[in-house]
Image (cartoon, rainbow, N blue to C red; front, top):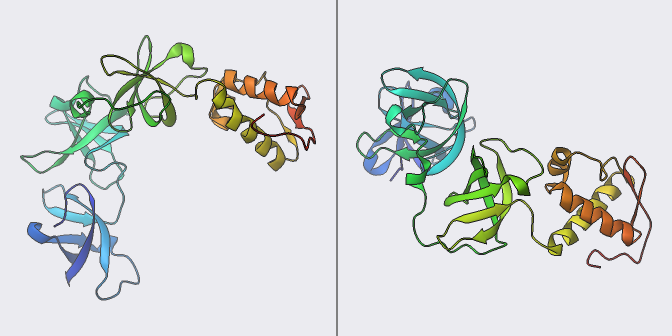
Length: 286
């Protein structure tokens, strides 16, 4: 059976002037409008389509890929507000996604990016969004471990730091004093569990802890040097934001890696930049 709000592999039932009707199982036939029909279609083909309700609440399919599907978190732009029902978000489809007023933790404004959870309203069967994120997070026992690699979605800036959704599962916090660069709401990046608190809350970091973070970073810098003719215009005076973008690490970790490479006579400082030194005795783990 086809699932509303998800991508489905559906078989073609019949052709008509509006488009193709696909077999939606218990949901019946689902129209794929003509403008979405792919070229070079063969008899018996199944189509990979996203199923949702159109502006007249009819089931339709599209080959377009939305920015978020049901049961996913995403950062979407507010494109309009209807004073009777709520805000509408750009999620990559012809019909914008509704963010009802009742699902807005704080009122949103046109042009703003907001982090939302996408879900299927059990009564109307409409796909809607919510900024009330906590009610859609996992409340079961925390099984995360310190130093565990996780995926992060930045949701808000607080006086202490940035809150982030961890692995689309639960909230964690990145403290300002552990960051060398500002983050943006909706940014996705890799991070690590720094501490698991007794209450199950997660403290996060963007860098691996201890010297173990330096070993792969040293090799990453050497590889970048080799690929760039032995010279890079990065050193300990480079801004934290540039370092984070290039090497996905903090400036402190970068400086430690440069120091280790210099001590092992693998690089020299050009001021500005660094240059690779031919040292066949170098080992990334030393």
